Length: 151
Image (spheres, helix red, strand yellow):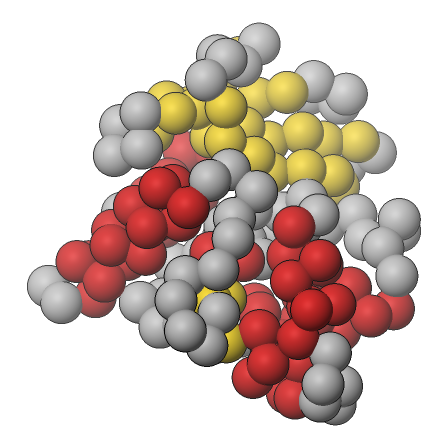
C-alpha cells in the first residue's frame, strides 16, 4: 500500500521489521518497537533472508534523496556477503575514496535501507564501531548471520 508502513515481527531481535513505500519504491527499511499499520510480504521476505532461509529480495530503492557518495558507498556495502564484514576504511577504498572512512561511517549512520544495504556488516578496524540502533542490535544481526552461515 502506498504511503503506509508495513512490517512483521522479527523474533530474533524482538523488534518489528518495517518497510515504507512511496510511488512504488522503498523509501525506508527499519527496525522498531512499534508495530506496523499492517503486515508486509516484503518485510517477511527480508526477515526470511535475515534468518538465512531465502535470498535477499530484489527491491526498487528510492535513492533520489541520496548524494553520489552515499550511492557509491551503499553499492559497495550491498556487495558484502552475509556473515562477512568490511571496515569503514575498506569500504571507502573499494568506492575509490581511500581516507574517507569517517564519511563512510556517516553514510552508514543515515542509511535508510537497513538490511538491504547491510550497514551492520561495516565495522571499525578495532571493533564493531557504531550503529544507529545501538551496538547491541548490530552484534545480534552479525551473530545471527554468522550462525546461519555456519549451518
